[in-house]
Image (cartoon, rainbow over all chains, first blue to last red):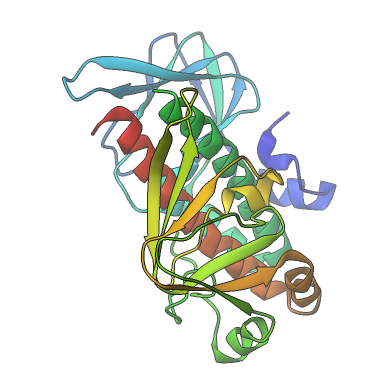
Length: 139
Length: 145
C-alpha cells in the first residue's frame, strides 16, 4: 500500500489522487539524479529502486532498497536542496509522482489532509533518522 | 516547502502568527540545566525547544563509549524523532552551556490542535524542516562528507 495513504481517510485519498502522475522505469534507469533541483515526492508502486550515494572518494554506495509503497524524495520536498542521492530502478518499476507545486497547493487548501500528510512524512523521517543513527553509532 | 513563512524565532512555532503563538507559548513549561550536566528527556511525550544555551546528544556504542552525534542551540528543537515513533532510545543529553528548555507536552498540544487545527498543520510543517535538517547533518557525518 502507498504509505502516503496510511493516515488518510477515503475522501482525503481521493483528493490526493487528483494530482498523482504514474511513471514507468526500465531496470537501471535513473529516477532522480544526485544534484537535481526537482522537489516532487514519489512512491514506489511496483518493483524495486536503489538509493545511491557516493563516498568522499566518489565511489558509488547503495544505501538502501525501496519496494512497493515506500516513499522517497520527501526530504527535498521539505527543504530546497539539490537532490542528496540518486534513485535508480533495480527492476522494472512504476512510480507515483506528486508534483511539488500541486502538492503544496493541495496542502494549503486542505488543512486536514495537509496535517496528516506532513505527519506521515515526519514519522518516516523519524524512522530513517533512527536507522541512520544506529549505523553512525556503530560505524 | 513554500507553504508558510517564518514569523517567530522558535523553530517549533516559527510559522504561527502572534495569536497562535500565544496559545502554544502558554502551555510551555521551563526546565534548566547547569553547564556540563548529563540528563535524559521524555522525548516520546514532549517536544523540547532550547530557550537559551546549547545541548549535545550522545549514545553509547557497543564498546560502551559515548558517541556524540549532534548538538543544537537557542530556538532549535531537541530530538523530536522520538515524538513521532514513540520510542525513547537510550539517548543522553549534555548541556554545553547553562541551558533553559521549553517543554511542550503532547496532550497539551493535542488539546490546542483540536481547537485550532491550523496550528497542527503549521507545527507539523515546522517539524518537517527540523527533522530533515537533523537527518541531513547525521547522514553527512555517517558518509564523512
